[in-house]
Length: 494
Image (tube, rainbow, N blue to C red; front, side):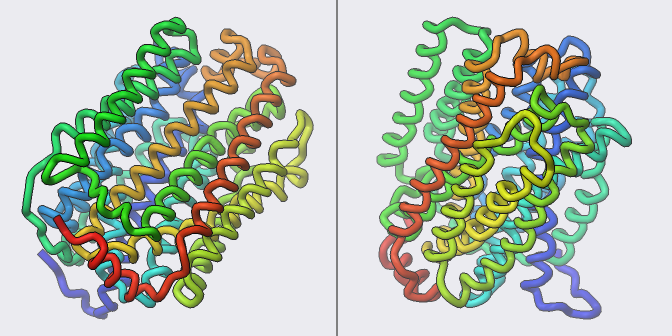
């Protein structure tokens, strides 16, 4: 069903408005819970540090696992249909999250939310790419993609304010009116643009090995970091997870209708953009998590509200540089802008790697501005290059693959940050920090904790510089329209 609007705006703006709201809502929830973790830990009965971590990691893990398959399903059954379903599932999951009575319930219901987020993310970029001509695609994808990254950062600000004023349950209930508007909007005014590639079915072998492999790796890292399993179990589960991921790649090479279209990686622009996206997400994925515990923990001991306000410059620079870089990318091509953005972010992380125990807002500001400006400059040109490099009937695949790489990188980044922070901090003190003990500043030594923060940010800077190298090697863009044509010849539809 499609309804004609009385003032008849161009369809591309209808699509942009709806997908931007959807991406913002789903990404906001990925981080809005981070700053509320101490409050949740104090409020829900029987909460453990491990359960608290999985409230965060379960969301990103499930989103990463389902994205590619949902992208494939959108190519088969229609992007509008599955995108609208994503709004419904996410909104219903948000309602239930706010009603959770135990930590285990909240972990499971966050995973329900993640299924809805996967449906939204895997279809929004493809809907936009179909709606906009090639010479305007960078700007549109830039606005949409920056809404994802701004949502990730703004979630910290909004989460701090809402948790302080109304309590943590309202961070989920805020999604309800947005979700209802999104459902009605997409049902009435979005068009179906998929080519309906109905060949083949679901790649069950690929889905199971990828999902089980990712889960095993994250379980090994988090359970090992918190001492829930011994060294033998840690290495056994980690090896099993990596083995399943290797089996996943082998399966994708031989099945007739794979979960991941590996032929897309024959396209140089797509491959280099994908590597850059994964490394960028691996670098910045733990930023919010580390900053929240730096600001509220033994270093500064700020309230949730003040900690959220400290991060406003990060969200502000993203909001400015994201759309701007998309417009410039349409004019000058993505390679230079995306590469420069990664280098700028690397310098920002290097600046943050020197933070101390008594830093002020002004001292923290340059690093946050550099990281935000660099992230905003990178995201939209890189996404535009990825989507424009592939043929139209594979854009669902490309969108799902790109977002999967981003969420796999984010999940890995948080897991590694937890591991580093745990190694530097005694286990009882680290658990007290996560659970929001009444005096985290007095229970956790600031020196070892700051060392862990410095190491995480130095690792992030190194990953971003490697990502910049991959971005620079993607080759010059001959023109977005030409890129699509070239992709069609290079990677024919299966």
